[in-house]
Length: 206
Image (cartoon, rainbow, N blue to C red; front, side, top):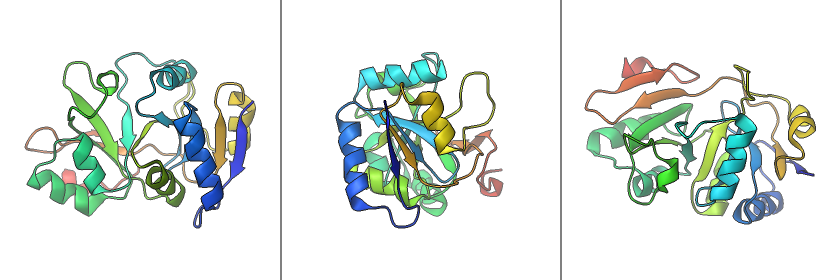
Protein backbone atom coordinates (compact mmCIF):
# COMPACT_ATOMS: atom_id res chain seq x y z
CA UNK A 1 0.00 0.00 0.00
CA UNK A 2 1.49 3.33 -1.05
CA UNK A 3 1.84 6.36 1.18
CA UNK A 4 0.09 9.61 0.21
CA UNK A 5 1.65 13.01 0.95
CA UNK A 6 -0.04 16.34 0.34
CA UNK A 7 2.83 18.76 -0.27
CA UNK A 8 2.36 22.50 -0.73
CA UNK A 9 3.11 23.40 -4.38
CA UNK A 10 4.84 26.70 -3.51
CA UNK A 11 6.33 26.03 -0.08
CA UNK A 12 7.06 22.28 0.16
CA UNK A 13 7.16 21.02 3.74
CA UNK A 14 10.76 20.04 4.49
CA UNK A 15 9.67 17.11 6.69
CA UNK A 16 7.61 15.53 3.90
CA UNK A 17 10.33 16.15 1.29
CA UNK A 18 12.82 14.42 3.60
CA UNK A 19 10.49 11.44 4.04
CA UNK A 20 9.96 11.23 0.26
CA UNK A 21 13.72 11.22 -0.36
CA UNK A 22 14.13 8.47 2.23
CA UNK A 23 11.60 6.37 0.29
CA UNK A 24 13.51 7.00 -2.98
CA UNK A 25 16.84 6.10 -1.37
CA UNK A 26 15.38 2.83 -0.08
CA UNK A 27 14.42 1.75 -3.59
CA UNK A 28 10.92 3.20 -3.71
CA UNK A 29 8.96 4.26 -6.78
CA UNK A 30 7.25 7.63 -6.33
CA UNK A 31 4.69 9.69 -8.22
CA UNK A 32 5.52 13.38 -8.05
CA UNK A 33 4.50 16.63 -9.79
CA UNK A 34 6.53 18.54 -12.36
CA UNK A 35 5.74 21.75 -14.22
CA UNK A 36 4.06 19.83 -17.07
CA UNK A 37 2.47 16.70 -15.61
CA UNK A 38 2.89 14.10 -12.91
CA UNK A 39 5.81 11.70 -13.29
CA UNK A 40 7.07 8.36 -12.01
CA UNK A 41 10.49 8.56 -10.41
CA UNK A 42 13.12 6.48 -8.63
CA UNK A 43 16.78 6.47 -7.65
CA UNK A 44 18.92 6.59 -10.80
CA UNK A 45 21.10 3.72 -9.59
CA UNK A 46 18.26 1.37 -8.62
CA UNK A 47 17.74 -1.31 -11.27
CA UNK A 48 14.82 -2.99 -9.46
CA UNK A 49 12.88 0.28 -9.12
CA UNK A 50 13.51 1.02 -12.79
CA UNK A 51 12.08 -2.38 -13.75
CA UNK A 52 8.99 -1.66 -11.64
CA UNK A 53 8.42 1.60 -13.55
CA UNK A 54 8.85 -0.24 -16.85
CA UNK A 55 6.18 -2.74 -15.76
CA UNK A 56 3.73 -0.01 -14.69
CA UNK A 57 4.04 1.75 -18.03
CA UNK A 58 4.73 -1.41 -20.09
CA UNK A 59 7.86 0.15 -21.56
CA UNK A 60 10.40 -1.52 -23.81
CA UNK A 61 14.17 -1.41 -23.31
CA UNK A 62 14.33 1.26 -26.03
CA UNK A 63 12.39 3.82 -23.98
CA UNK A 64 14.32 7.04 -23.31
CA UNK A 65 14.31 7.89 -19.64
CA UNK A 66 14.98 11.37 -18.30
CA UNK A 67 17.19 12.60 -15.48
CA UNK A 68 15.41 15.38 -13.60
CA UNK A 69 18.15 17.67 -12.28
CA UNK A 70 18.21 20.53 -9.79
CA UNK A 71 20.52 22.94 -11.68
CA UNK A 72 22.92 23.44 -14.58
CA UNK A 73 26.01 22.31 -12.69
CA UNK A 74 24.36 18.95 -12.02
CA UNK A 75 23.56 18.55 -15.72
CA UNK A 76 27.26 18.79 -16.59
CA UNK A 77 27.98 15.79 -14.35
CA UNK A 78 25.71 13.55 -16.39
CA UNK A 79 25.79 15.09 -19.88
CA UNK A 80 28.43 16.52 -22.19
CA UNK A 81 27.69 20.23 -22.52
CA UNK A 82 29.68 22.58 -24.76
CA UNK A 83 29.45 26.39 -24.67
CA UNK A 84 26.63 26.58 -27.23
CA UNK A 85 24.57 23.97 -25.39
CA UNK A 86 25.22 25.69 -22.08
CA UNK A 87 23.84 29.01 -23.33
CA UNK A 88 20.69 27.30 -24.63
CA UNK A 89 20.22 25.38 -21.40
CA UNK A 90 20.77 28.47 -19.27
CA UNK A 91 18.13 30.47 -21.13
CA UNK A 92 15.51 27.67 -21.13
CA UNK A 93 15.82 26.16 -17.64
CA UNK A 94 14.02 25.65 -15.42
CA UNK A 95 11.18 25.01 -17.81
CA UNK A 96 9.05 22.64 -19.85
CA UNK A 97 11.87 21.15 -21.93
CA UNK A 98 13.64 17.81 -22.08
CA UNK A 99 17.05 18.06 -23.73
CA UNK A 100 18.71 15.09 -25.41
CA UNK A 101 22.46 15.21 -24.80
CA UNK A 102 25.45 12.90 -25.02
CA UNK A 103 25.80 11.12 -21.70
CA UNK A 104 28.90 10.98 -19.52
CA UNK A 105 30.15 7.81 -17.84
CA UNK A 106 28.24 8.84 -14.68
CA UNK A 107 24.96 7.70 -16.26
CA UNK A 108 24.11 4.00 -15.71
CA UNK A 109 24.20 2.20 -19.05
CA UNK A 110 20.66 0.85 -18.66
CA UNK A 111 19.31 4.43 -18.81
CA UNK A 112 21.03 5.29 -22.09
CA UNK A 113 19.72 5.07 -25.62
CA UNK A 114 21.30 1.71 -26.63
CA UNK A 115 22.86 2.97 -29.87
CA UNK A 116 23.39 6.69 -29.43
CA UNK A 117 24.63 6.80 -25.81
CA UNK A 118 22.34 9.77 -25.13
CA UNK A 119 20.22 10.74 -22.15
CA UNK A 120 17.26 13.07 -21.60
CA UNK A 121 17.91 15.87 -19.12
CA UNK A 122 15.55 18.42 -17.65
CA UNK A 123 15.14 20.99 -14.86
CA UNK A 124 11.42 21.41 -14.09
CA UNK A 125 9.95 24.72 -12.96
CA UNK A 126 8.23 23.09 -10.01
CA UNK A 127 9.06 23.73 -6.36
CA UNK A 128 8.30 20.18 -5.20
CA UNK A 129 10.38 18.49 -7.91
CA UNK A 130 13.30 20.84 -7.27
CA UNK A 131 13.07 20.35 -3.50
CA UNK A 132 13.20 16.57 -4.03
CA UNK A 133 16.30 16.75 -6.23
CA UNK A 134 17.97 19.21 -3.86
CA UNK A 135 17.39 16.96 -0.85
CA UNK A 136 18.32 13.84 -2.83
CA UNK A 137 21.61 15.39 -3.94
CA UNK A 138 21.38 13.84 -7.39
CA UNK A 139 18.88 13.58 -10.28
CA UNK A 140 15.65 11.59 -10.18
CA UNK A 141 15.29 8.92 -12.86
CA UNK A 142 11.96 9.88 -14.34
CA UNK A 143 9.26 9.26 -16.94
CA UNK A 144 5.82 10.80 -17.46
CA UNK A 145 2.89 9.08 -15.73
CA UNK A 146 1.09 7.91 -18.86
CA UNK A 147 -0.69 4.60 -18.43
CA UNK A 148 -0.53 1.88 -21.13
CA UNK A 149 -2.92 2.60 -24.00
CA UNK A 150 -3.39 6.26 -22.99
CA UNK A 151 -2.13 9.38 -24.73
CA UNK A 152 -2.33 11.81 -21.83
CA UNK A 153 -0.76 11.71 -18.35
CA UNK A 154 -2.87 11.10 -15.26
CA UNK A 155 -3.85 14.35 -13.53
CA UNK A 156 -5.71 13.48 -10.31
CA UNK A 157 -3.50 12.26 -7.42
CA UNK A 158 -6.47 10.46 -5.85
CA UNK A 159 -7.02 8.52 -9.06
CA UNK A 160 -3.30 7.74 -9.14
CA UNK A 161 -3.47 6.36 -5.64
CA UNK A 162 -6.52 4.26 -6.48
CA UNK A 163 -4.96 2.83 -9.64
CA UNK A 164 -1.38 2.34 -8.44
CA UNK A 165 -1.45 2.03 -4.65
CA UNK A 166 -0.05 -1.51 -4.84
CA UNK A 167 2.58 -0.70 -7.47
CA UNK A 168 4.21 2.48 -6.14
CA UNK A 169 5.50 3.40 -2.68
CA UNK A 170 4.44 7.05 -2.56
CA UNK A 171 2.00 9.39 -4.29
CA UNK A 172 2.75 13.09 -3.81
CA UNK A 173 -0.28 15.33 -4.22
CA UNK A 174 1.12 18.68 -5.30
CA UNK A 175 -2.07 20.04 -6.80
CA UNK A 176 -2.81 20.58 -10.47
CA UNK A 177 0.37 20.82 -12.53
CA UNK A 178 -0.80 20.42 -16.11
CA UNK A 179 -1.26 17.51 -18.46
CA UNK A 180 1.01 18.29 -21.41
CA UNK A 181 4.33 16.58 -22.04
CA UNK A 182 7.55 18.57 -22.32
CA UNK A 183 8.98 19.73 -25.60
CA UNK A 184 11.93 17.49 -26.47
CA UNK A 185 14.97 19.13 -28.07
CA UNK A 186 17.95 17.15 -29.39
CA UNK A 187 21.18 19.06 -28.74
CA UNK A 188 23.57 16.28 -29.77
CA UNK A 189 24.33 17.80 -33.18
CA UNK A 190 25.39 21.38 -33.96
CA UNK A 191 21.86 22.40 -34.94
CA UNK A 192 19.07 21.82 -32.35
CA UNK A 193 16.41 19.36 -33.53
CA UNK A 194 12.83 19.46 -32.25
CA UNK A 195 11.87 15.85 -31.49
CA UNK A 196 8.49 16.61 -29.89
CA UNK A 197 6.51 19.81 -29.56
CA UNK A 198 4.97 20.02 -26.10
CA UNK A 199 4.46 22.55 -23.35
CA UNK A 200 7.60 24.65 -23.91
CA UNK A 201 7.92 27.53 -26.40
CA UNK A 202 10.04 26.04 -29.19
CA UNK A 203 10.46 29.25 -31.26
CA UNK A 204 14.12 29.59 -30.24
CA UNK A 205 14.88 26.14 -31.64
CA UNK A 206 13.01 26.26 -34.97
